[in-house]
Image (cartoon, rainbow, N blue to C red; front, top):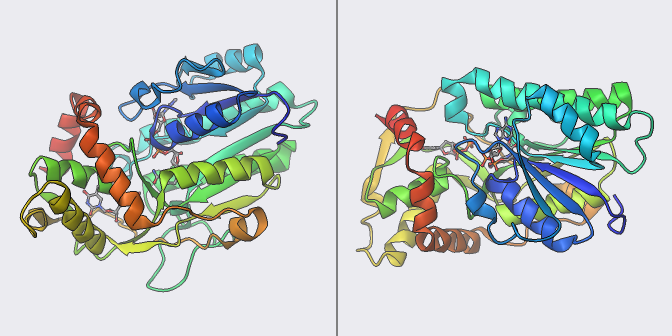
Length: 353
Ligand code: NAD
Ligand code: TYD
């Protein structure tokens, strides 16, 4: 995509965790683009994530469900977006275990509705158009103790969440093959950072330590994830959106594997210092609980393709990113209170009781 051409960019899920960082980056970096943030503000979407950009002249917000075929069609007819960066999704594995259908509705049907609207808008001339699909490394299933996911690793999803994301990836590819629709897909590892909803491991545990609540570690805690700072993911999306090759997939990762239990212990250590607590007191909150069904043992990304071909690599080292993240949660207690009231309370009770 040419950075100089004025274009209308639709970013879906821009009120969520990663989406809000992508919206901020694009609104500030590309004042000549018109950015449309489309989000239906589920429990995970929060416009408080974007107060610093909401009054910028190139920022627009549209509240809409991506699976609403009629309204999405009308929207594309009205605005004729040149490109889409698609992040809107149901994103939490534990919720997908309890309610797979809502993941099918948003992640599969919602994606196909967007693909269709985009195709119908530009099918006579796709020049300079792009559908950029944001996906996850979880589509590849689980690794054993060795090896890394590459772009050629066969899909083998194990949770309803990853099955729905895998399905959406397949539909994007199919639209590329069948209708010549220009697309790029990126599959990223676990993100952490500011504005992540406190149901995912890192913000949940920060919030629980603040509130002196148990830290529910699933199984024996010997599950490995590859962690990437969210702003580095946003930069990777920017790079792949502008420099990536049409029809390609890029794996994005942190080159940063941690066993859950080691990560949790590090987090406890840092929190003791930040909260001026006696050394070891946060660690006493660790509670081993029943394992997640179908729990993937290990994810680890080989991100050498995006590094070698597009020149992207993570810029923030994990300890530094975690430090910034903890400080952000400690300074934004009002944000935390807002997102953890209401519906979240009943989810939490149900999940951990
Ligand atoms: P999130 O749950 O924080 O945000 C999702 C956003 O999508 C929310 O703002 C929500 O309101 C919106 N949304 C949900 N359903 C919608 C619908 N039907 N219509 C319109 N908007 C809807 O998710 P996230 O962690 O920011 O993830 C964003 C994307 O990145 C997802 O596609 C996810 O699969 C992918 N991803 C996430 C991670 C991670 O570690 N969080 C890693 C790799 C890829
Ligand atoms: P999570 O943040 O839900 O991301 P994902 O499942 O998409 O990787 O979980 C990260 C890891 O932490 C995963 O192995 C599950 C584990 N975990 C716990 O041990 N306890 C918890 O309460 C949560 C939410 C996750």
